[in-house]
Image (cartoon, rainbow, N blue to C red):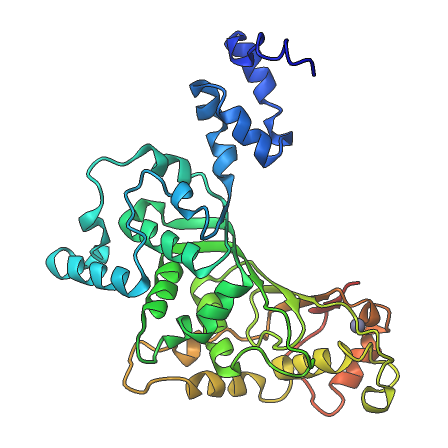
Length: 355
Ligand SMILES: [Zn+2]
């Protein structure tokens, strides 16, 4: 573009109806172009704000920009918990005390953030900033189309935080509880950390993983849960529809001696079979409840109630990135899988494999 000409014409000088015609096409703009366009003039900024904020990716480096103007202090989890506790002891307990220290006049940024439909939390720092915003401005709470938890955040929720429902409380537990209480995503996207060098080595404590997932699924009741990059530690708790995106097939020759002919690659054959039996096999739900109970603190009456633990019976599960299993005769694979472990519920049409 000739540099002499580009500043002589400004789109916001057009008549409003022509601007509107142009703006109808903003759906096709990239996020970067949207930002540029929003800086053109105030009218455009207002018009583009919903698109700009529809999908928010929050991480440590941009959290101050995302929540600029809200007067947040970016507290640590223990600081945030004790502030809410102090506010709550002096004011109405029903509000969790948080609104007690909110600014009297709602900032404009609040209206912009209310357009968020999809939020991706890239780290625990970002989650903490969101928790502080939610506690300060309860109006931000509510339904989301999608909430994505990065692998580092999910790892920290499992290892330190949310599973502490029923364990000695920590600041991280408070972070998890706040997110659970104040958001309601239709789709939950959970990214897994990369697996350990040996495929069979677990990343998560199985009890803690079960507890965290039981809380997320039973409290949020998401329409769909996507697990991304699963190599080990198959999810023990299912959403209504669960999609497990596995790591790629193992290049190693299939281990036919162990898993038989109709069994997929060495990465997926055994793992998926084991998972299906753990979900649907004899005593599957009782075993899950027992595992969850193992991590409970008997003195905590607010711990996960066994009746609230989501049951795989009635759920649907899809395994993706498994060309080795998708190529098999599904009925034969499933009847082999459950030959000695007959499912306790009807699994007809509820298990699927995709390349
Ligand atoms: Zn495979």
